[in-house]
Length: 534
Image (cartoon, rainbow, N blue to C red; front, side, top):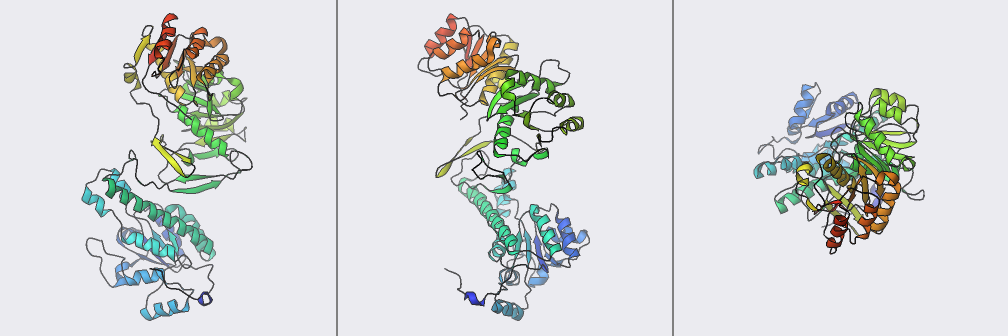
């Protein structure tokens, strides 16, 4: 049923709305006292309930109980608190209309200009493995009703659903009130907040669970714009970066210095993380145009493991490393910073930086340094937009016990290598996952020496890897992200002096490929699993 119709001539203009009365009821109490301090300083009446009211009172702030507003006590174990006309009339009254103002006066109800509400931790409760009844108790009823009512009435009410909006509200308090533009932006976030909440509840009821492993029947991705970028992949394209709700990746990294990040910087930095963090030992990956030009782990017994890993990665292709993006899976040290002084680099991303390293980098003012969030982790799902929709898949990850898994790889040619050579093959196999398909990686001593990527046939990728490796190809090992359809690709590697090859297997011509390896007495493993990266 449609809502009531009003004559536009009856509406009074209302841009800046002073905040005189606020309704506060939050489950996430981050920075709540900071907001309360600003509200109290501005003489704002705070109406609250439950744990929020208790916290505010304990901190010394004057609070009006919702029960004293409604004249009705909290009941049914807190299920009924704010569902009352004295609350919702104060949220929904459109004070641009003289008749609404008159009705509030007759009912002796005061309006709210600010509502600060976030919802029960439903998703967190589900993921904790709680029992069904406990999950149901975390389905918020009054909260979404207040959020949606306030957002609908954004012409008069500012609705805040996240502590991240507190600074803007505090600034508005100090400036005389919230603007219409600000209230509309807050309303958009509020409706997105309740939509995501409802999606989570609906998914739980439909599927009986809510885990990151599920492929849901309905998918809602919530993200907020973090920053507008100078341009996109090319200068004529608009671009922005968004942070996803619950995200802890490159979008949540802290920029410590340097020029503003570009669209391509973010793409390359994320690709670099994919390569470096596949490794367990201290590792560095250097990326150019979303492809590795060098990946390496530290040399044995290195005095500075992360600096050693960087030098070994750089040696793979110093020409391509010029203007590259670097990711380290450990703290960037002074030694690594000194090694980079004369190498033009766009971005370095790492979990942390030594203070002395930061001092060295200050001389390179344009160099962007990104520190990963403390809870950074690789994504468990991949999402890619396609025209008219999107694709969702499990992220391509290696098992933590890959050394154990490697013992089950099928040896189809040559002898099983010693432990050191197996370590080198495992490294090459991992590194190959970070290379755009068709992918060929040549490695020695757990460092890449030649990479062939992004070709439309595997033979060209083999040629490119061998050409870039040069003399270093002899005695190295090779990894292919997918099977060899013919023996011509492996033959190029064999002719260059490759000692061992690791590949998924599964071609209808596997026998021809195996025969070529056996004739050359080259070790070859089939893993039974490919790692395309498009």
